[in-house]
Image (cartoon, rainbow, N blue to C red; front, side, top):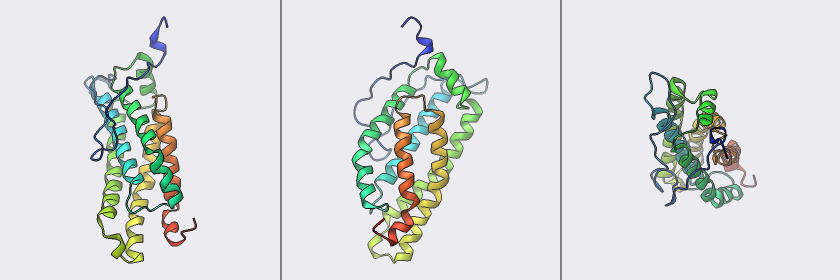
Length: 210
């Protein structure tokens, strides 16, 4: 094409897997990025975007692989089956964001409020909620669930649901703003199906037919 400033470049491929942090290693890393404004040196916005998307992937990884399963088994098995593909899409998006953005991408990020102080605010908010979500999932995973009473197990699940609700809204906000990045839309659609399953998680513990 004669002028590549009006198109989104195809992302490079990251080899070696990817996946949630702490389980399969982190995603792409990069320092080249949008100019976030006078208060933000070049590269800060790019680094934040990479960190935020990696953070979302980590939380989804934990939810998909929660043990023992919480959501109905028929859904849990499908989430596990499709996670590898979703993880590749996250890696695809991270590879794209690690590259120096085109003028079009810089403009799209600015228009979506994904630069400068606004981006920093979104990162702080995202991390605040997902830190607590991940802590709730890890607490659930670490407890000897089979020795707990029904009410104790329900309490642990309720804590996950409590933090997943606002965390999910923020994941949607971030990924919705990055929908023009290759791979993000697939990951977002997957996340929404995981969210729907967790909406009935507490009820599913009482009624295994759900």
